[in-house]
Every structure is written in C-alpha cells, then in structure tokens.
Image (cartoon, rainbow, N blue to C red):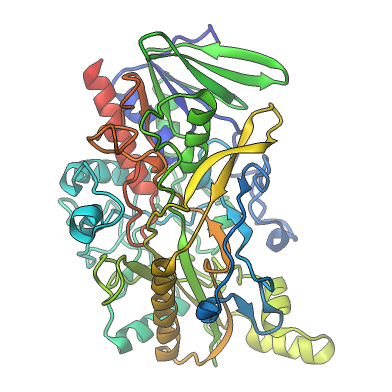
Length: 547
C-alpha cells in the first residue's frame, strides 16, 4: 500500500466513512478508504428487471448471515405472548420458548455499506432524545447538542438531496429541505385517514430519495423496492453521493476487498498502522497520521477488541442498542395498490419524545410498513396472505393483491447489562480472527414499550377501516436489527466513554470513530444514517482543525 500517501485512513465506507471522506477531501486532505467488500453498480447489480426479482432480495456479494454469532437469547415469558410474531396461514413464526436470532443483523459489506439496503429514511434526532441520563435516568447524555449538529445535518441534506415536509416541526430547522416532499402513495393516504381519525399528525417522511432530478440523478419511480437496491440512483446511497464527490476531487482512493485485521499502536499509544489482507495469507500495512473507524456498531468494537486497543474504560462493545420494532398488517376491503409507492413515504412523530407515552420511558415513531414487510409481489401474497391452491386461490389472488396495508413502529432501545458485543471464543472468520458475538436481552421496560407500539399500530389500521389482521411481527421473539448503536459511546469522561465529544479515542489521539457505535442513546425510532453522517463530518472538521 506504499503507492498512495494518505493524510487520513478510513476503515469502512458506509454513512460515516463516506461522509468523513467527503468532508476531508473538500478541505484538501488525501484520504484512503479501506472497504472489506466490493463495489456495487446500481445499473447492473440490482435485479428488479429480472423475472425472479421477488425471490432474490438484496443481491449480497459478500454473504452476511454468518459474519457474526449470537450468544443464547432469553427465554420467552407468557406475560408477553401478545407480542409473539404470527401469520394467519403459517401460525407462530417462532414456535420455540426462546427468542430467535432468525432476523439477524441486517447490513451490507460493500462500498456504501448499509445505505445500499436502506429505504432512504433520513432523520434528524429529536433533541429531547439527547438528554436521556439527565432527564430520565437511563442511557447517557450526548456531549454534543442538537444545535451543534444542525449545520452538519443541513450540509448532508444538501449534498444527498433530501426531500421532506416543511409541515414537520418536530426538529428545529434553520433551512428548508433541498427538495419538495415525495408524494404519498394512495395506500399511504388511506393510512393517513386513520391517523387523522385518531387525532395524530402524519407528514411526509424525510427521505434521501429524490422527488425531482438532482445532482445528475433522476427522481424516484415509486417501485417500492428500496431494500432490494435502487437501480436508478435516485436513492441517496453513500457511494453515489458522499463518496462519488470525494473521489471526484482526486484526493480519495477507495480500496475494496481490504479486510483490516488489526490496528497497531506505538509506545506512545498513537496508532501507527493498519494491517489488512486482500489476498489469502498475505498481510499488508498502511500508515497515516490519522485513522478513522467507520465499520458500524458491531464490527468497530470487534476490530478494537481484536487489536487490544482503546478499551481502558472496559466499555468497548458495551451499551449495545438494537432495533426495537413492531409491524401489524391487515387487508383492506377495496383495492389500494399497496405494492406501489415509496415504502416509508409518511411518518407520525407524535410519540417520538422519550416522555410521549405515559408510564413508558422512550419514544417511537409510526410509519407505513407494507413494502418493508415484503408484500409488494405476488409470491408473498400467495404464501402469506391467500394460501390454498387451484381456482379458488387464483380468484383470491386477483381480489387480494395490492390490498395489504401495513403499519410499523420503531422505538427507543435502552442499554442494559445483557446487551453488548464481545469476541466469540470459538468461532473465527476466514482470516482466523474471532467473530463478533452479539448479546441481546430485552427487559420488561423494552417489552412494555413494544406493547405500546403494537397497540398504536393496530389502532391506526382499525381507524383506517382495516379490521382484519393477517400478520404481525416484532422484535420481542425474534432479534432482527438494521439499526445498531452505542458500543463505543462518546462522552467527556474517559471512565464512562470510549471517545470524546469529537469522536476521538480517549487513549489514542490519532484514532477517531465515525459511526453509530458512538451514539449515547438510540433516539425514539429515528433512522440513524443522517446523524451518523453529520457526526462524521463534524469529526472530519476536527481532524482538519487539529492538522
């Protein structure tokens, strides 16, 4: 790796790594991005133009199902049986008496990271969710305020081309959204009538999805399949936004297939080099004045633990927070075309504040969920909605297709002693390194919040005139997370945090972290991509200033 001299080496190219690369190169620094996975070409790699599109899901080039392991999950308590996942044809999804890891940790190994997979939800944090310790006695306070992040939020939104509603006042804004809100689908407008009947507000969701052409990219065509990869480039994935502009400066080089094995420090504690592997059994190394880790809240602590670095506080891997989610799906009596439109084109923020629901600490948001429940094609309708066979099956398919309406909720995740990431003592990857092991435990506080989320989702469907439920699922009986946080918490005190308020390690003054592992709290269901990028850009500004 001696053919490229870098001022900064970034490990990982997702929402954090790509945003940091762009901010650094814009300031004139030379950046080397090390990415373990390959590049994706949005025109050729995504499969929505193929007959088997519904059966393929996101086209993983690097399989992720076995990249991490799980410690035994908790036994299920009959007290919470109303939170079991079920389908009217298949019955209980988890028939055992212990929580399942079937949903797994949903991520992508490749240039752009999990933004390749996400639906484009682009949320700012609720300021009230950033004071959880001082106001509610749980999690931790953010050492950076919303007002400090606000200009970085706006800067990221402009680059990506964010669409949103000017009616949503839940997060203070100094500037308008760069683009008009994405039009709501007919099915979402039907759900909106339910929110209105309940007296709840419902606005267009802030999205990193183009409502009109922007930055040499076309507008959304409302195919509803963001999770399978956007074949047009209208979704603002990190590779075609931040990283494309960083590479255009000529000061950013991205090396794919670069699996970083460990970081090494000198006698003073500064990181001296990263050891990586691109070919089996052959190690290379790269040196730079500054290193930024952006591998996500599972793989970043794994790299630090495998390197035996940065863990003087004992908190690397601790305070893990996962996705807390619920989905209820029913059948409309009339055709609503719910297979069309953006999957998450609207959102209710009324219950997003940590104190919004009496008797429960931690908020949640409510959003359409039909497409994210994978009910946008006939195969899943046949298997999960209609069932049967023959002439009656065909008639039921013709009548039912496009009539499923789903409502989902995403909520606060609060850390406890049973939620953390460590190294698996038995399972190793292809390079011989211990895999990350996920420990997850939902206490009664989390289950109580899930119950509230479930009741609100059911209420929306009922108010929208959908009384026949056909399927429900949640994270009580099945771990399934795409949003993970907190394993390298930021804070001012080295005894209670891993990095300082700028994202710099308390122990190595040239090591920074720029991903959701630094989050002191998860927020009340906000998608974290925008906040990750805003924090990463702020960290990059600190690197530039200290240089």
